[in-house]
Image 1 (cartoon, rainbow, N blue to C red):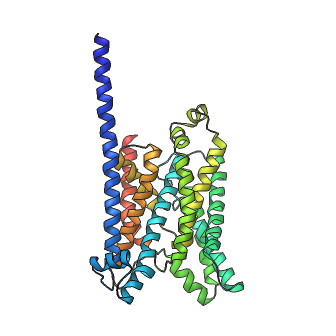
Image 2: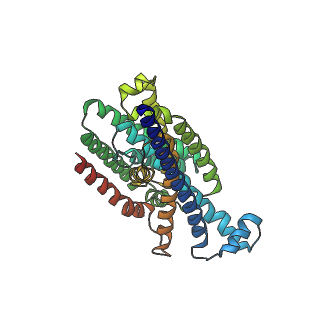
Image 3: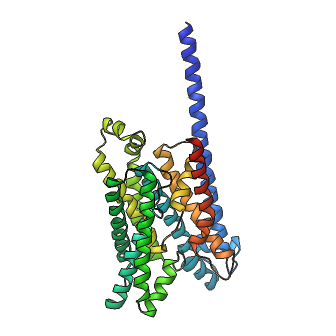
Amino acid sequence: MWNKVVSGEEGRSFHIENFRRRSRYAIVFVFMIAAFLAITVLSINTGNVHISVPKIIRILFMRDGEAVEYSIIWKIRLPRILMAAILGGALSLSGFLLQTFFANPIAGPFVLGISSGAKMVVALAMILFLKYVGHFSSYTLVGAAFTGALISTGFILLMSRKIHHMAALLVGGIMIGYICSAITDFVVTFADDSDIVNLHGWSQGSFSGMSWSNVRVAVVVVGIAGMCTFLLSKPIGAYQLGEAYAQSMGVNIKVFRVLIILLSSILSACVTAFAGPISFVGIAVPFLTRKAFGTSKPIVVIPGTFFAGAVFCMVCDLIARMVMAPVELNISTVTSMLGAPVVIYMMVKREKGR
């Protein structure tokens, strides 16, 4: 009898806790969707040409309005907002995968030099294609960035065989980033003036100049990589509990690690190809997402990280456009100012927890 009473109380406690946990997930997701919609409207509304909300609704849903405002929304602001959302989500997801792989919350594509490797090869590709072909496609840039990201990741994996201390490995990644940046600067120094104009704007990091063609390519690449990441939720959850546990659950560790690195490289490469290197998003957003949901479950954190990264980059892009208008700040300037304090907080908290 006593055992049945205890069992009944435990069952009620479990259901109450489960209800609270799911309610928290739902509230955070609803908040993210509301923030996404609010920032989308604010980003379209704000700029050198102010467009009222009723006009935005009419132009978006009825395809009716003044020609100038119609062109501003459909040809300039909407592609830019969507790219900020897609690439912000991709960069955050890339950071989450790297943090899972290295079991370190400070690992990210910018810190490990992966973004710098992608930047180096994209710079080389831009110069070569402009010189010998005269133009380059979005897929060319994504392919070049993916190659550069894989080169940097390959060096990090080679180092990880000799260096087992995570802090030293992160320092090694930073050094790889410096080497790639130095090679990029060397190449840019001897490039033609017309090439330098293209490279200078892109290498500073920005969502400006995005087109619907860019959006279509980003949707395809990030959509496939994001879906594959979500399908890996269960193996990632097992891997978070240790390699031995993951193996006991039937996870092929070698294949799993290759998939994680490939997906992370594709996502960060896509961001670098279109918007240039963007710092701190891949580290700060996954941490903030886990804090908001109060869990590390991949099936919740993966879509949450994507949404949070999208909202974070949309906010940063709006700040970059408006805070010193008409002069536009580099996107990395804003992401660093907002993301670096989060990383410092993470490091201080980690030290206190030891």
